[in-house]
Image 1 (cartoon, rainbow, N blue to C red):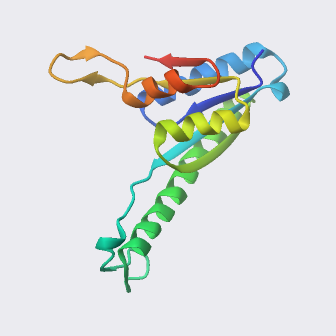
Image 2: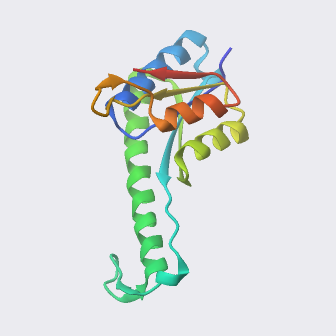
Length: 161
């Protein structure tokens, strides 16, 4: 059945529900050692043009650095924060359920990173949250990330509302 379940996680209400569903499915599989839930945090990456690479003060050291280095330091801090968030969630879930979990943090285009990770890891199922209300119409809709992942995924995608 499912041996690897990927859950893109960002601590939102929908991603919390997605983790709960993944754990439920992993428990149904029976042998916990045969099903692994992978929590993936994707940090959206924004390119910095070399034409605006000017001096700024470092958030870590306070020294003057290039804008490119400043942005890299910010990403390093976000990766550190995301790793802590994922490890905390992993410990909480493993303690409560005993389900095998692993965590990963990456940076890039969010939807593309999720699809590429699923392909590389040969994931059997992606479980992810949708977005909330959108626009003036206040109709429930899929977010651009969940829509893009569901359209391009190499495996089934379960979208949690």
